[in-house]
Length: 92
Length: 373
Image (cartoon, rainbow over all chains, first blue to last red):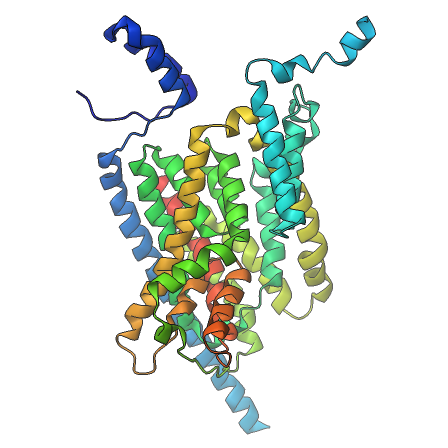
C-alpha cells in the first residue's frame, strides 16, 4: 500500500479521483472522490527538501558574506571620512 | 417582471456552483478591514486590500475585466513590479541609517534574521510546492511587502494573493508573533542585559556614500535585484544629500501614500475567489508564520552564539529586531527589554538592527532570485 499522500490542486484532485476509480471497489469510489475533493492531502517530498538544502546553505552563507563586505566598507568609510574631519578640525 | 429579473440577474451567480466562495471572500475582505480600522493593523494596506477583495469578488465584477480599473492598475504597477519599487523610494527616504552606520556590526543580526526565509523555502519544498512557488512563499519571511511582491511576481508564483495577504498581515502581527518566540529562547538574565549606547559620529559624507556603495555591492552580487535595492537607496540618497528636502518630503509622504493606495487596491486582483480559496492558501499562511518565527529564532540565536565569545555581552533580543518590519520589530524588542528592567533602553540598538534587516531582506530576495531563476 502506498503510504504517500499526494498534495493536489482542486482540478488535479478531481482528475485523479476519476483515473483512480478503476482500482477501487465500487462501494468506496464515490466516498473516495468526496474525500479527495473535500480534503487535500500532502505530498511529503523528501527529495525536494534535500535538493533545497544547498539553496538554504548558499543563501545564508551569501547573506553573511555580502553583509561582511558591507560592514567592512562602512568601517572603512567611517575611518576615512572621520580622518578627513579630524584634519579639517586641526587646520581650523 | 422582466425588469426585476434583469435587475437581479446577477444574484443567481451567488447561489450557483462556487458562489459560496464569493461570500467567503467578502468575509475575508471584511476581516481585513476590521483589522485595519479596529485593531489598527497595517491600515494603509489591509484596508485597501480588504475593500479590493470585496470589489473583485462580486460576480461578473467589471473591475476585473480586461479593461477594468483594477486590471489596468494591476498591469500598470504590479505585473511589472513598478508600484513596489516606487514605494521603496518612499521607504528609503524615511529610513535613517545613522544608528547602523555608527555601529555597522549590527548588520550581522539583520543577516541572521533572514534565516526564516531559507528555512521556509526548504519546508515549502518538503510540502510539495515547486521551487518557484516555494521561493515566493519563503520571501514572506522578508517581512517586507515590496520585496515579497517583487520576488513573487518575478518568479511568476501561482499564489501571489496568499503571499501578499500573508506578508502584510504578519508584518502587522509582529507584536504578537515575536514576544513568545523571544521569551521561549532567552532566559530572564539574558533579557536583562544592558547595552549602553555610545553613538559614534557619522559624517555626512558617509551618509551620502552609503546608499551608493550598497547599491553597487548588492547589485554586483545580485543583478536581478538592482532595481529593488537601487530604488530603496535612491530614496535614502534623496534624504541624506541635504539639497533635496522638498523631494525627500514628497517621497516620504505624497509618493508613499499615493503608491500605497494604488498598490493596496490593485493587489486585490490576486484575491479573486478562484485563486484564493484553496487549501494551499492556508498552508501558505502557515508557512508564512513559520518564516516569521524562524526569522526571530535566527536573529536571537546568532546573538547568543556571539555572546559566547564576548566579555561584554549583548542582549540577544536585539537579534530579533533584524526582521525587516520597520519600526515595529525594534519597538517590540525595546518594549520587552523595558518590561524586564525599566532602565534598559535598547531602542537605538534595535533600530540599528531593524534598518539593517531592511537591507538584508533585499539581499535575501536578490539571492533567492539568483539561485532560483
